[in-house]
Image (cartoon, rainbow, N blue to C red; front, top):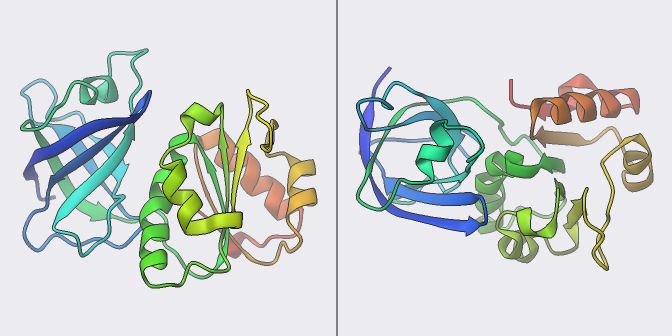
Length: 222
């Protein structure tokens, strides 16, 4: 596996606990929207602590971008990434699988699970091929939504926010459960893309298959 040391060009918080990193792009480095790499911090005690993160930029851009949720409640890699700033260095590895876009469908994301979908949406939007896709995005509160304005601009009425711990006028204060799926999805034979915490992915995948989706049509990170 190749290692690439890349300098951080920009590191800013875009929500209270989500940070956007723009880093150098190694020459000849290529990825498909939805793919990821292993990232570590280029410090002696952290360089072997690898974590998978999805690219959120477009493939043709001359930099790489990651949008990462920072967990300060335990002293792990993301808490340390919360202290990484412009001029610091990260180490990235080879590109690997993750979620690949096949055809229009319904994207269901929980929290930071939106990240693999960001590059996919940006890519389709740029190609004017986003029509026919819908995003159901579940967060605890409105303050947790990642790149809300951009998602709204790209998807318009096909961007549906769900808040599990907040009732905001015009938004749904509930969970994505069997009842919600039946009431909001007319056709279970279409493609579904799911990403979020593992219990969220497992639960929604099982519900969709129970309701008539086929396993081939339900795409999630393996």
